[in-house]
Length: 505
Length: 80
Image 1 (cartoon, each protein chain N blue to C red):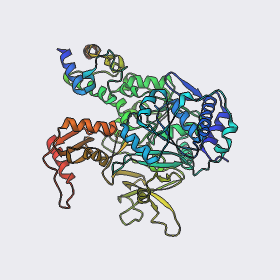
Image 2: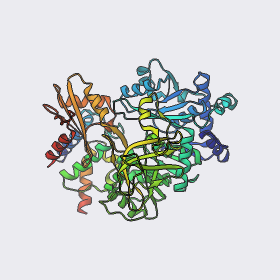
Image 3: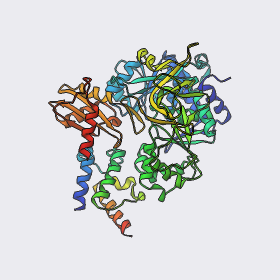
Image 4: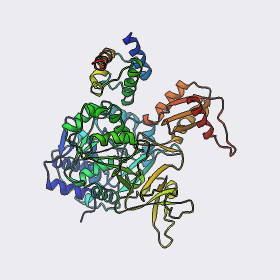
């Protein structure tokens, strides 16, 4: 029986020790090497008394990061990957929520980490002695892991300005990967071309499909997404046959008409998720890669990664929207109407999920957990938790689920989930700002920040850039004399939105 | 003339580029992914040309000199 991700990993190490597990531009690591180095790191962590705790990983994505992930698992720890490009205050905030005491990093970030985390134990991944692998030293700790133990916590933007960390177990990850592999016939022959950052839930599919199936993970350098021809050439050099990207990345390729210069030679599966895929750009991909399987996946971090998929099997016009399809095997995705009853065809309601993909909840946030991980209203006989996504959807005439919009003000841009409230919190925190409102214009995909205060736009911009990640930067900052209030006494976001539209016209 | 327009484009797109004194903006991580796409769009708009995908490569985005070469090469491709 296999209970943890490590059971699957070791199986593959034994079956194909010399196979490449992870590949960077100029470097790679085999399954055997990855196993040995991860065990060494796990042993190092255990020797420092760090087991069954939280390990924070502050590394660029790549081989070292995968070693750190597995090292954390070998020492029965839960890991959390931080965005090295995020403002340090946000990173500290996350570490505070986690009550973490250990950071795994490399020489590259040592100075930054030392300056910002004075009370933390710092483990340098490049300092660990990899020569001796003493499996015995970690065996009892490693074997103490059960399938409901946490693998990781992934943090997403929170409405109060405090990021929320979804905790996901071995069981959820294993169950998810098994279902995804079945749906798309993924196996050890897969060579993933990874685009998404490791602190983003989409990377769970890339990383853990690789480890569990014995596939190969190719890290695509971020810079290549600015140079589409180089990007496709790189996929060809590395013989990448499967990608799971955010639509923005696919649109860069389509918008620059890249395939007139170079076409992917090995791609057989193109999966995408994270935001709505524009059909115009998808049709471009399909035109050049007619033999390829294209699939639209949907789901939030709270259900490990995704819960539904739609394999594109009919022609869509450029103005149409792709459905998010049907649930994966062993995952139930359904729509509840406003009366908490199953929605009928074409009736809008909240998309809800039940099953093993569900995360355990938010780390150190019982209140928020109870709000969205709650009792299934369709089952009054025994405790059964469902996750309420806050997304609105409906069943179309084909019985497929269609995504309509977010229920609240949370938005998705470039695949990242953004709570406008987090940007507002950062701006409101400024001394010379009285109040502010952020609105999102979905047609132009722009975040516009309105504020009242005695500070100029440039200063607000600088302050925002120091406090929120790049993908949350407002596209436009407007200083106004006052922010309109609606009859309910709330900021009138609709009026602000119409102001933007009026300006555009 | 081309250089002045390019300077205007580059500096309006990237604040960091304004202060940069090195010789390779890509190697030194001065330009973000979105900024590179923005520069291409601005070049196309300002010079009324289309930049073919094979010219969107790091070598052309290293400096103002290489951006100037990009405009000239794109013009040549457009005319050819």
